[in-house]
Image 1 (cartoon, rainbow, N blue to C red):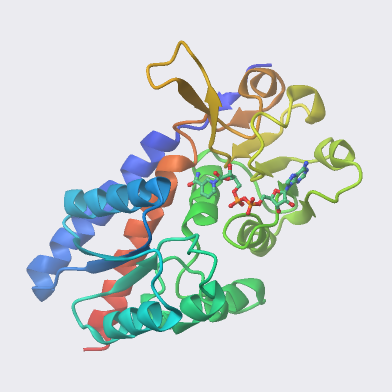
Image 2 (cartoon, protein in one colour; image 1 turned 45 degrees about the vertical axis):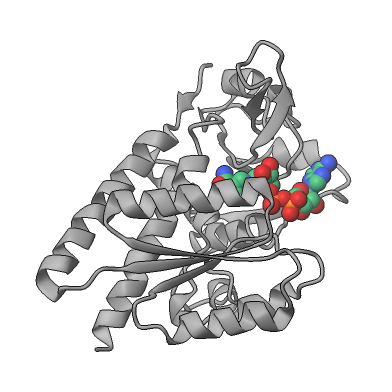
Length: 294
Ligand code: NAD
């Protein structure tokens, strides 16, 4: 069997186009431009790259972006007072604090300090709590797992009644992904580093979401034929033949998995582009909320 390739680039482009159209309409109808504030603490090169690409995407879609950078030794008070300044700024609709924060900072307290209505990453405990509860809806859904759900939907994968196995239980991917699939009526199993027999779980999964951070850990022979595979992993592996000396691979061994799966996301070009697209959608939503309160 050869799997249907779930083209994250194409789906993300669709989402971004819809956002750009709505941003333009908002400017015309309300004379209002959505704004995203990014907060980067320290000089981690990967974090700086992520922030820059988010800012560039804002510009492309007509969203105003304002970047704030604090030194690596910024105090808890410095970070929280910047966040409260942004909470009060009517030109800022979304606040994105780039994670991970330097170790001396209390991430939970920082995320708690972001106004619920500006929590475009969807990491505020109240938004996560609402995501977990039946009959409650968060204002914002975390971008990466939300992007995975959009990919499943676009690929026509049935979630209702499906056996879904999430590998990884991080706060930013695995856990909210499990909550979303559960809300979409899947029967959800969360596997993690202490899971005794991962293959046993994978073998009965109609949907597999891999968010582990171990290059190509899940092989084709671990999967049930026809399963839908969403590979969240982004790992650098050395490749002397590649221009940059490395290439990106997922947490799933794409070649062997594509032989067995019914549908699969490639890396790169799968989940990656969806994360920023969903952030743009959340920022637009934050602006819509602000307008509705005017
Ligand atoms: P994390 O390190 O916070 O969590 C990894 C999870 O994998 C943990 O819950 C752990 O229990 C589990 N795990 C580790 N070893 C395991 C094993 N042998 N068997 C089963 N489970 C195991 O990572 P994260 O932040 O959730 O990120 C996961 C991957 O997704 C990384 O490759 C990261 O780069 C990528 N990522 C991609 C995007 C995107 O936009 N595409 C966004 C966030 C993260």
